[in-house]
Image (cartoon, rainbow, N blue to C red; front, side, top):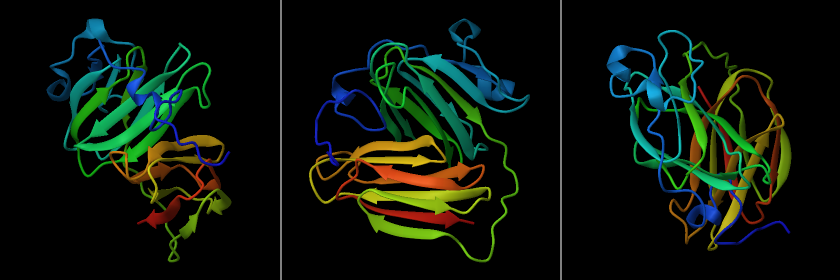
Length: 233
């Protein structure tokens, strides 16, 4: 069944279980990096951090609110849940960045994605009780881009290749009906797993990802979704 139109489902970028799982008490997290960035975080709340020296990093569990410093423009988000299924919902600078379902009985079982930010902003993690998460700053490095920028536009499920070079890709997805999944895997890893549509908030998907290299894109369970993949210089 290519389109899953449910109001509650086992976890993923955006979800039916959004209202059925998660929420509740959370670990506010621990910060690793500049003392200016980290003063508000208590070491006792840490679940661990492997950030490079001087890079911003916050780790915690469950619902939380914290700020990403203005100087951070790329952040790597990872999340795991040891139970069956849970939501993992993240808003950054007022916009939903992640709304997924993960867990031991779900595919994927964990979340791992890198996001491009305009520059810091407030983070709100909601409906994510029991989810262990880490936000780590990604150092800005030079991105090799050829004179021919990659662009791919289409609808429904599809498979295609992104050129094999480090690049930034803006992914946009819209659905004219009430709800539909929008699931994107790149190079074998889940990048987008969202529910969008006229009855959802946000109604569409729009995010920019930093890719270490290109790879095969597989769009699944996205019947009726119009999508665009645009390379960002």
